[in-house]
Length: 253
Length: 247
View 1 (cartoon, each protein chain N blue to C red):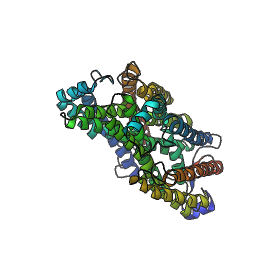
View 2 (view 1 turned 135 degrees about the vertical axis):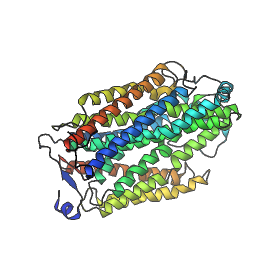
View 3 (view 1 turned 135 degrees about the horizontal axis):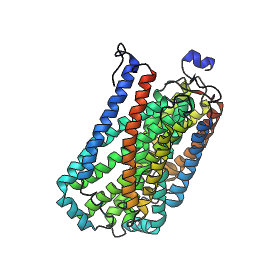
View 4 (view 1 turned 90 degrees about the horizontal axis):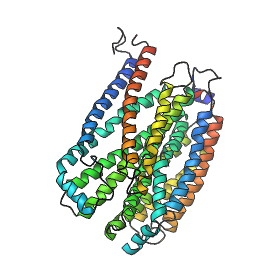
């Protein structure tokens, strides 16, 4: 335990295990699943499910049914793959929670981060998969029902804002308060931009075209760029935190 | 479990007691869910994805009562599996330092998986709410119910993977779970994995009503829950012995 941790009461607790038994390999196993999962996630959502770049919101039933007919096979393969691997998000975010528990800022925001993202997985990742699954299941389904599944899926995927804003807020505040230096302070300031993009994206709920629609240059593309930069920085910060983690210690309960 | 005298009021006694109470809650709810499972007409045999809208609507109209009974029971008791998973989380946190990294991922996967399961019962019960609804709408609710019930096994997969890794790395002198539980958890995860691709077909063993996606998946996970109840009971018992609460 560092001096700072001893003073502030946070930090890691050494265990009884002898150094010979202590190994950091489990931490590295969990760590490498993190970029691996987001890589797969990219392939699934961009190449297979076709939700990035997003199909247009300003279209009629003809376009919507044509979208599902055209990408029928890739969407279903993508759904199978997603249903198999989507739990990777629990590993990635669970591991961030683990490092947040090592901060001097206490467990509160670590639990908020974990809880908010556990909730966010349903509207932010899975509901679109359920909708697209139902939409591609039957070619003869009525166009008005396919249209409803299309909207419900895309709005839920791009428009789940609060779960993520809450998680980002918890992450940023925890880093700023922390005295153990688990993550760099600049990552907190970068994370605040993630909250800003979520707030801007509220506009997609009342726009069907233009820069603020679900496929718009601001509500979607700006948010995606910020997310990409932020995610890469977060992965690097988690790698550094794992590097500096002393083997044989663990977060306080 | 007979406590030694003089330990009733200790904080660590309450910790063991609440874990045992949690396991009882899950054991009872599991037994009730088995009844609900047996009572859902849609499982005997599991409804085919190839059924027409008319046939599905008629099925819901003819079996409204039993569908409502079983899905409301799933709704009420399904998340009572959570106490078992939370006791497992507590037990993972008792393991050697290097196994701790898996505890939070396990808990997150538990919560996510539970939420998905809760959703499937809502779709089935909503389809049965108005049996005279437009058959095309009953069909889409039924489709969503089946997709959500069978396909998204990703969370259970990660739960079992995290549990197995935590057990493999729990190399202290007093392992919390025996090693074979880890092998078993991996085997169950592998048996469930193909069900993810039930979304790609509408007939055969991989379809949502097929031998692999429905029967293998459900029997494997049911057996896993039963085994984990017993194994976790024994783990809590060992904790009580180690902490000097019982002999």
